[in-house]
Length: 197
Length: 197
Ligand SMILES: [Zn+2]
Ligand SMILES: [Zn+2]
Image (cartoon, rainbow over the protein chains, first blue to last red):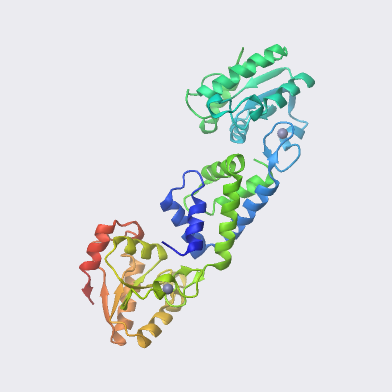
């Protein structure tokens, strides 16, 4: 309905989660009418991030470094390793403020129905770390959803075989919810009441 | 809280209207975890639009052409000229479906308090057109807000001086509302019951 380049921009904005046709139109016109410098900044940030952001070789989180800042931080307790599904979950746990160990970010969960097996979410890398590093406790903080629970169960089995102590964060977190949206207090409680598996 | 390039992308996304810190984070991680091709498409669409989209020389709407498709369309009645504030308003009126004339897009409204005078919203260009073209009716469809009303009033005065017939779309549109969010039926009604000023 607008000129081709504007229509194209409106379509491109719709890949953003939560953005429907009406808000995409509003965003495109706002940028072109009132904030071309902001649009240019957004274009170049996207370009930079696409080009340089990959995964940390140790924990698989998103980062433009080879090894991310958390993995290289000597203040973090290397004997604790917490498994989460996404980088947003790491942020949520950090904001809860009572965990000082390291993370392993699956960037997903097991989902046989979608053809997502252990190696697709880096479980091979994780098991190698459990074999080669001195990790005293593996804390499973995948989401309390069906897939998250299945992933935690699978990881617990594997870790026990390697004789690594495993725990699951407590279910103060409402079932079916997503970790990244839980308040810090509930999350801190869940960490504190974690139980050996 | 994430690595620098990711934080930068999250900040850049916040220039989008209606996007707060939490949704910006969600958008950035979604793109980097799951849709790098979509992100690349968005970056290039932004770049293309920034570079090529300017204003139509005749009606001032946003377009990458010198003269936009509506202005060059011989099917449109060149004796009717409808003044709106934004390209989104043009779209809303087109979707209402009962107007066949042309448009003039102010890309704003008079606002002395913000230092926005007649020339900042192209009124000089508009008056020149009223003098040089055979326009039988100038339809004022600025928003029924204080600034939109003031702009319509100013335009009516100027057009009368040039002996051009002026009308204002009827106030079926709720006062204080924004044209682009009104349903087509109300807008069509407002067009049909427009009154000479
Ligand atoms: Zn890392
Ligand atoms: Zn035009």
